[in-house]
Image (cartoon, rainbow, N blue to C red; front, side):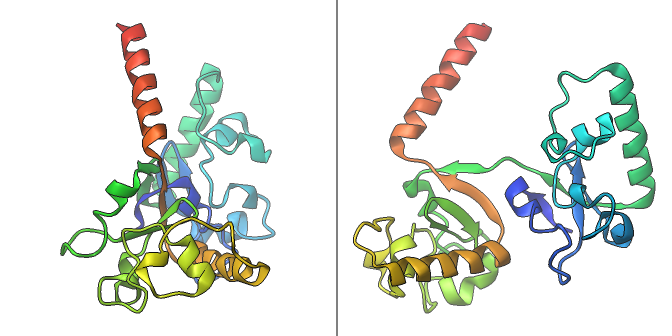
Length: 221
């Protein structure tokens, strides 16, 4: 079971890593289609669907990557009926292992609450604004780990290969080419190993989002 998963993390289950199962989503439901790898695995006719939300593509009977999304608003009744037929087939053949959820938008203050200090609470850290769930890496990134960075933005620290909490920030202006290469190497490891669950949002961005939300609510009223 993968449980709640973002589209960013779903993309990792496209069959290119043979150690991972093969997933795709239809109307937000994530199916394990590993046993259908002859259809959806690398090199197969429908591999374009692997690791994606494919509702629109199924409804349109499309193999165009741009149609691999969950947008259904402009589809015809016939296309929606086609999608329903596909869903019925998948439900009969494949196991539903999770559901697609939107990316979390967290301020650094909110991120700091996921530092591993509270038992049972997930553990997050951010690299260049992308938030990873590193709960399974608690021995490395938790309070007692070699890199006690949970609950922080730590791009600079990884670039410098520093274990100092004071280096946990996103200031990269004075980094050397070698340090930036180090950061990209760390990012690659995290992208392949840990789920992406959200993005860091500045206080200003949060305020703007709240104003836009209030404006939409007022217009709807």
